[in-house]
Length: 515
Image (cartoon, rainbow, N blue to C red; front, side, top):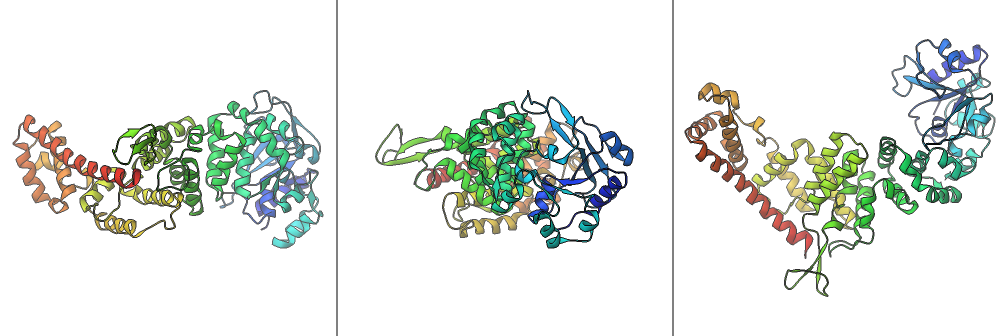
């Protein structure tokens, strides 16, 4: 790793004008652990107005002393480099932002306000500019870690080497200053794999309730960063043991100790957690990881004991098993509500709730037909089918089975590949509304939609019907029918689709709810 040339250029200009420049924060921590920095931060004794004069093409739109210096770099991490005046912060009456920011003279005073020791180190770029510029990679790390370049008043180097996350000074005070640091602690644990130091952990538990003061958007952003790490499952578990989960995703706690049926070796919470862990190790998208975590969130609300002999739902019994009928339906609604509360985008909310709703699809070769596969594609969208399979794989591994893709699932994937080019939506029919109006002289209106709906249902059952000649002929016959005759026909087509789905649903109940 080496410091970006744009950072060194900014430091050189500050130095030429008698100002100091220190590399600080997460970018320095990342450099010292061989992680590519996601952004670059410079701390300086120059006031914001002075920085702005030195770099006219910069942005200064805040009250925290941070100037965004624009560069001509093609590297997105270097397009804007933040240059912030040394500062201390007053009290945090709202637990979110300082009531007062005061500019100070030394880097040591500035580092004292930071959250964790591994983020409270600095390298003097101006005093050592030539030395830093002429040394790269391991040589740079050696120079820093041998104290020749490092400013480290709180032992961040030691904690970095030991893999320890420790608050700067009094942990409780740091969290009370900015309660979002509670989430940042969990995120850094998951991101860096560092153990949280004992006093810092105790402060996490003691101050967890402070999260109530934090805007949902800020919690969402930290949760997203944590979920996108390889240790996302560990992060969720730390949130549970510290009490943070209660203020972020409390619905997951209902799964703790919620025993499942004979197909599972974990309770609902553990199962959801292990499903997320698998998804995270596979590098899945945010939507898939969230769906893996939430796919069975509806189980505690739908759990009922069912007697094996009679098939009746009873309060208790020696012989029987737990059932979770329609948990995917309840879970999809719950997932949408949870993500809406955290202000996730509509795109993520819709995708995750759909994946939760559809995750129980059947893939037994003796049950699934090509028409059924086409209807599955029509419901979820061809663009989402791979993600749906990923959620199901996470579900399987989270249940304790050894294989993510058994033969039956691979067979379904082959069927999906076979029908991917088949028509599964009105847009994929060989004719459209304009064809009906032009060829059959049917006026624009409700009749067009009714005919298209019937044609699509028939083509889903038999894609060989999807030719312009066949569909126009069939449409001509349908156009002759009265509205009273056409509506039942449309309803009958939908009933056939529903009957096919009901058959699958019954199989789901037999195979996955009760042994």
